[in-house]
Image: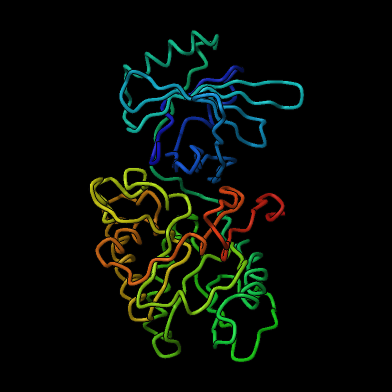
Length: 380
C-alpha cells in the first residue's frame, strides 16, 4: 500500500454535528510499507486553524488485515473493496474504559467514486453506524497555515554534536555547518582539535515541507559561495539523529547515497518513488535501482553542488506546475541518483531507525540512528 492515499469518506459512531466544520477538508495520506508488513503513515489535519502533521506506525498482527497502533490503544482492520484501489479502514480506539469506532473509505484517486461510496455505505450499515454520520470531505493536495515544528529541531543539535565528536571522522579536520533560523539557540559543545562549528543563518518557512525542500537550495547556494573554498567533502545529514558507532572516511566518495532502512531488502515495486508523470521527480514503475534515504548523502563539494542545484531547480519547476513530490526533497534525490549513479552506496546501518525496525541480525552495527521524538514534550 505504499504511496499516496486519500480519505474519501469518514464515519464515526458518535454524533458528528460538531465535528463537521473541522472535517470538511482532508489532505493526502502518505503510506510506506516497511519490513514484516508494518506500515508507516503520515497524515496532516487541521487543528484550530493550523495544519498539524502526525506520523504513526501500524504494526501488523498475526490476524490477517489487523493492525495495531499507539501502544495497542488503537486497532485497525483493513478490508479490500471490489472497487480497484479502494479499501475500508475500520478503527477501534480504547480510551480508559470506553471504546470508540470509526470507518474510513481510502482510495488512490481523490476524485469521488460513486461505486466505492456505495460499498462504503453498505459497510456503514453492517457495522451499525448512523448513515447520517457519513462525511465526504473536500480533498486538498496541500495544507496552508501550517504550524511548523522546524524551530524545535534545534533541541536535537546538542546530542548530534556530542555523539559526532565521539564517532564521526575522529582524528580528522571537520567543520559542522549548521543551517538554522535560530542562531542564538545553537548550543555550546566542546569540540576537538581541528574541529569547529559554523552557524549559517537561513530563513524559516511556514510549512514543514518547504523547510525540507529548501535545504537543497541552501546547500547548493552555500556550496557555491563558501564550501568549495573551505572543504573537500560534504556529508549532508538530518539533525534529529545521533551517531552510535564509528563513521569515518570509509563513507567518502565522489558521490554517495544511503539505502533507506525501510526498503533495503525490497524490490523496486515497493519503492515509494514519485509516480505521477507531471512531477520532475517521476520515476516509472519499471525503473530504479535502490531507494535512497534523504537523511544521509554526500560526496565531493562539486558533486553535491550539482546534485542539490538540480534537485532545487526540479522542485521550482514542480511548484510552477502546481505539484509537490510525494516525499519532497527525498523524491528528487532518488530521481537524481537514478540518472547520476553514486560512486558509493552505503548500507542502512548509516541511517537506521531502531524504534521502528529493531536491530535485525543482518545489521552488525547501527552507526547513525534516529532519536525517538516525544513531540509534545519537545514543544513544551
